Image 1 (cartoon, rainbow, N blue to C red):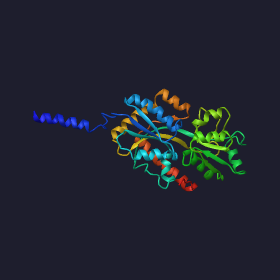
Image 2: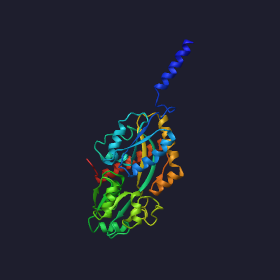
Image 3: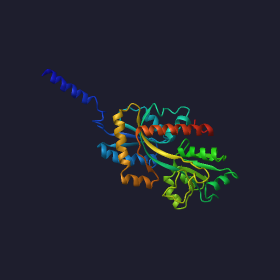
Amino acid sequence: MRDKAWAIVLVAVAVVEAPCGAATYPARPVRVLAGGAAAGPIDIMARVVGQKLSDQLGQTIVIDNRGGAGGTIATRLAASAVPDGYTLLCNSGHFAVAASLYRQPGYDPFKDFAPIINAGTSPNMIFVHPSVAANNLQELIALGRTEKLSYGSAGAGSAPHLTGERLLKLLAKLDVTHIPYSTAASAIPAVAGGQVPVGLTAMPPTVELIKSRRLRGIAVTSLARMPSLPDVATVAESGFPGYEDYTWIGFFSPAGTPTAIVKQLNENIAAILQLPDTKKRLAALGFDAVSNTPEQFTAYIKIEVSKWAKVIKDSGARVD
């Protein structure tokens, strides 16, 4: 009888001391550090997923916007968080870029994180003010050989910035000047207002302005043309076969988070991304919903780190 009583006590203690186990997770609200400003692509993805994840898990999902430094501020905070599944990170491809772009990024993309899922991808868009004498990429490159061009992006180290370095500087061999803005929401109006002739951002926030002809789409970095802007040619069909670049947004947890929790979150988010209304909403914004495993996402990040490290080295791009 005494042994039975002790067994009951031990079971009770085990339950109390294991609040992060897959069987009891989550027992309280989950915070998602979003590495971008409100209403930006990262914030939109975090909220689209977070709302439905809250319904699935039966807990509040708190979206905590920590924009700045291309999402590096949020990433550093997440890297130092307790690995219990209650602090997650939603960030863009800058996560893979910062390792080479900054001399001291403040985190290691492989040692400090357990990738959960790549939630969505969007091609980048090259666009110009309507007064620019170029209707396609080849005409823009020809113009850039006769006059000095500048292009605005969502910030130093963003995927669109490095697309500009890779495509315009390294491949097209143009002497262009990069003008970094704090967000795409700042860069796009600067081009539409004529302050800078060329812009390069993720596609979603440019769609309506291109349709209304306040901007002119020059080329998109997906391999196939995008249904929302079928008249805009791809870079691949504009003289650079096989070229593709994407702005991607994924979810991460700090390294050491129990594997069962990472797997559970991967399955939850993957299910959300396959819902018809989620796919429709993301598609309207220019995102393709993605569902992959943590292992597949980790392998993809390794490719991204290697690719952008070479671009950064060859172009000399630095932010510190």
